[in-house]
Length: 80
Image (cartoon, rainbow, N blue to C red; front, side):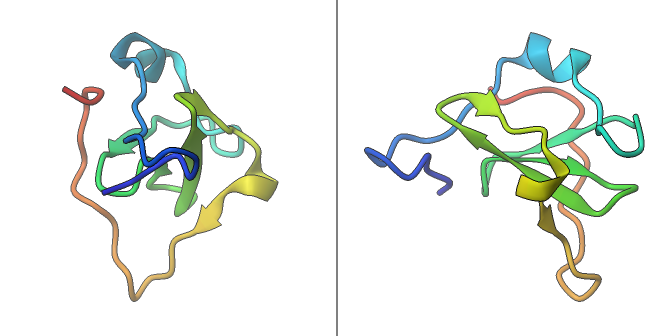
């Protein structure tokens, strides 16, 4: 379960916001990974954290996704 690191709350992203966001490096779409609470840029292989429901869209804050880890399956809509 992905948490925001404070009170153990599960991170969430508003589905409408997800439709508007793009990877700041590739300008491509992002997908939501509910297990880790991250926004995934499949092209850049970066995972942007979501803290307190706010996406942190800074490449310096993003986690690189190693090829060995693979990518989560695409999810076009936000969290349910």
